Length: 470
Image 1 (cartoon, rainbow, N blue to C red):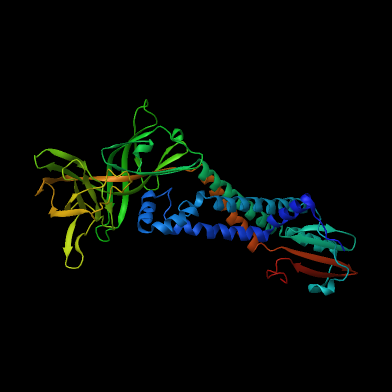
Image 2 (image 1 turned 45 degrees about the horizontal axis):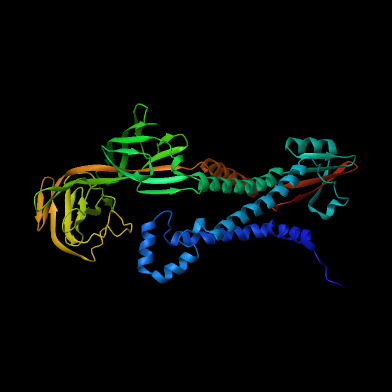
């Protein structure tokens, strides 16, 4: 027998059937989950270019190898996109035929009753007639097919509808995620109270664009942080309420409007939302050189390290000779013990202290390599001082001095544009509803045959759920 040649059309049809099988869809779904693991374990360029650079510095050879595999940009890699697109196509190919078949079945009458009901489940005989049986089944919302001497009744069509809805919802979720990744953006900016945030790229501390999002897509709004009020439980130290008072303008020509922002009540500018994401403190400092000239003055945001807002960060002064850097810790309510050393015992400003260590040398800010504003590389620097300051106090070191003038709160504004989130939300809701329907709705058939003054009854539970006998 000669070998059968499928040809181009036959091969394409075979590959399409394999791709659109439910088994392939499940495999691709598993591969998508596995492919996302490196994106969680390794730093990604879209979210943290500085951690990626640090990884290259610590593991140069390994980093080069991983970079060739796109493991520092997993979600933008060709192989992840290929898996995602194949999953999308596979789900569509699986679901659309099921939708068509289910639509046809809605208009098809139940199958004819078998000739011998005694061989089926829960066969029983009752005195009665088909009219009473039909009335009873209609009252229980069965779909009925009535012939001269038998009745076929079916119930539970929503179970298959739930199955179809669940798979259609997965496609809707994928569409929502795709729209968000293509046309969305996410950015964070720390804003000191009293300062203004204008929605331009240079004002962000971190900014991630979708593949088709550009700078011109940013809506032209501005926000001035007027005041921030945080309330804490004096017994548990836990936060009870955060309130940010702002004045906002939709564009440079519009008049500012006062608004209130809370954690679960963001500002909305069209499809862009601004969330109150975090808060902390910015010590106000003045740094002078040996000639008593001011070389740095203003607030320095420090990052909280615990629930009581013990904060750390850095103050960099590249305009001094030699260059000076301060490794800083801030305690809103200063306390101390032998084991922990200095720490904050409460998140409010009850007894603020600024702890600094002074370093001189090369801050490496002219190397062209991006670095965190909250850290100082002290490897090639020399520590020349260590001091704790209360508000109003100064500390003099070899080549200058620093004064702790006060404290202002800062807030982290997270700006998010995710045009696909509603699609993903509705998809998730529909998927849960469809899954519940497919799991708990009982699909069953009941057959009744007339035997003189008696009727024979038997049933069939299509999804094997209990309760058919009753």
